[in-house]
Image (cartoon, rainbow, N blue to C red; front, side):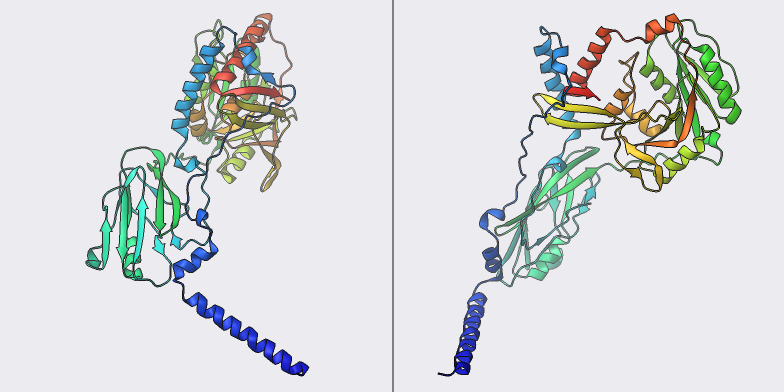
Length: 475
C-alpha cells in the first residue's frame, strides 16, 4: 500500500468518526446536552455561607476588653451582643448574602437594578427560558417576602399558571414562545412595608436554578438646596467656643475681613457666657461645660445653607482661606461629604483600617496618621482619606444624619469619622489653609481641656460597646 493511499484511508476514517459523533449528539435533547457540560451539583444555587473569622489586632493596639471593669464585663458583653443583633437586623438584608451563578444556565433573569416600592406590584424584567425543542416546558419562581402574579389570559389552554398571587408560581406550556410571553408578564409585590430591604427570588427549570435579588425601597423625596451665586448663600461658618472669648473675637474679625456677610453660628457652653454681637452672628448659649461634640451638634443643627465650614475658635482667616475653592471641589464631586483643608500647612489627615472580625470578639480598628488612598480625579492637590483636620467644609444634610456623639466632651475628633466610616466620603485638600492663633489658654480652660485617665478609659469602653470593637490602634 502506497503512502498516499494510507493517508486517504486515515482521512476517510476520521470523517466517518466525526459523522458518527454528530449522529450520537443529535440523539440527545438539548437540555440533556447542556447537562453533559455542567456537573449536576452546580445546577442548584443557594446562598454560600461565609464564616466570619477573628481579626488580628495590629501590634501596639489597645485591647478594649481590658478597659472594662472585670466585675462588669459579662453584663456589658451580653448587652453589646444583644444590641449588635438588633443593629444587624437594621442594616442587613438578602443583598448581604453571597451567591454564586451556575455555568451554562438556560435561564435569563435580572441580576442588578430591579427595584420595587414596598407593597406595589411591578413586572419583573427579562425573565426568559432558552432551551432546545421538547414536548413540555415548566418553570418555577418563588420568593420569600412577597407575592408573584402572571397574566396568561391571552394564552388560555396554551399556558398553565399555578400559584398566581402566591409566593411560588409555576408556568407550564408545550410552546416555548407562549411560555416566554407569560414570563414577560410576571410581577412581584412585597408582602410587608419596609423603607429599604430586599427579597431573594428563585427561578428554576428542570435541574437548573438561579437566584436574583429584588430591592424593596421606598422612593425618597429629594432634599435640594437653592445655593445662589454668593458664597454667603452657600456656606455658613460653625464654631464651638468655651472660655476663649479673646480668641473668638480675633477669629470673627478675620472672618469679617474676607467674608463680611457670611453667617456665623456659635455654640457656647462657657461657664459665664459673654454676649457676642454683630451682623449675621448667631450665638447659642448652652448649659455650662456640655462638651465639644454636644456643641458641634447644636451649631450644625442651625445651619440652613447647603454647606457649613467648621473652624476652631482659635483659628484665624488669611488670604489662603478660600472657601470658594472648597465649594468648587464639593460641587465638582457630588459624592463627597467632607473636604478638609490645612491648618498652617498641615492637613492632619488619617485613614481608618477596619476588619469587622467575628461577632463574638468584635472588630479591629487602626487609625493611621497621614494615611490616604489616592488623588481625587481632576484635583491633584486633594486625596481621598478617612478623616481630616478640624478645618473642613461639609455637606449639611449628610452631617446632620451622622451626628457627633455628645458623650464625648473634652477630647474628640477622630471618633466622628470612625462613626461615619463607610457612610462618609472624605477628601483632604492642601490648597486651602487657615491660620492658628498663638496658644494662650487660661488655667481654667486647661483644667477642662485636659483628659483624665478615667475619661480615656471611658472612651475605650465606648468603642468596645458602641463600635463592637475588640481592639484599636492609634498610629
